[in-house]
Length: 340
Image 1 (spheres, rainbow, N blue to C red):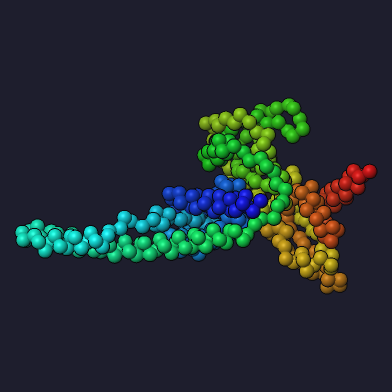
Image 2: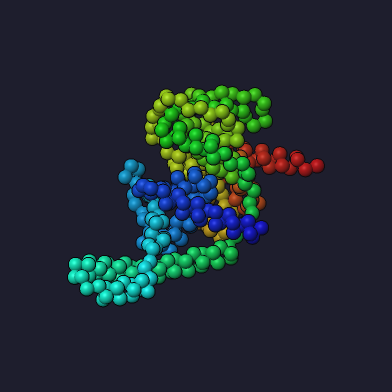
């Protein structure tokens, strides 16, 4: 198990390095997360590590096309020093110069010797830098051996690279697509013509976000097949996959959402709850009478929210909206009735 964890971590680290090394101004967190399929926190941790270890090769800048979006780049060619010159070769050249009497040839060789000496000094510095970088990479390998991820159920399926490439091409070029889709639990297949807007990775399912018949919808990637890109283009407007993801809980979106959500944290769980971020736009209000907390945010996904609250064993319960409270109670009843 530990060996698999180490392999996964190395795969993530070098995957980020490979993406950051692409030509251009750089790539965003969102691009890396979508490309690798790992969490934003993992990407942030790896980028922070690379920035600390390779400050001269690492660069960060604002995206000139999108405000408040940062781009990151890693200049990997600098990892490798140039071909170095041996001291013995310079010594041989110096002896040869002394034996040549022709002034014209001699002057040219002296100039060459001077250039090679400068290159030799640069080569020594490069080798010293490479040694330091190798030391840091070795330390990174040792650190990984003392870190592991807790096991948590996640969906095993990840779309085939070819499928993701087709979808990304359509999304980047704002091209309308056709695809076949079958709903989970049904045998019937539907052909859908839609505007692809983004890809959302979740713990329970991975989704293609589309605009279909004027509404934003989610389609499970596992259930999509036979994708065809048309030459018809569309305007995505002000849609942002980042904002869309921020308004979800888990990855599911209830039609008509997001909504104003409130949870009650009972006094016994306050200390532990304050160590958590339940939602990116959460607000925390303390009840002075009994010390409980009110966690409020805009979001949706009642079923996934209820599943998460079950982990707290009743120490955190939903207050609103009514749809969330009803779903929470309904699931509790279903669970109780499932045990004979």
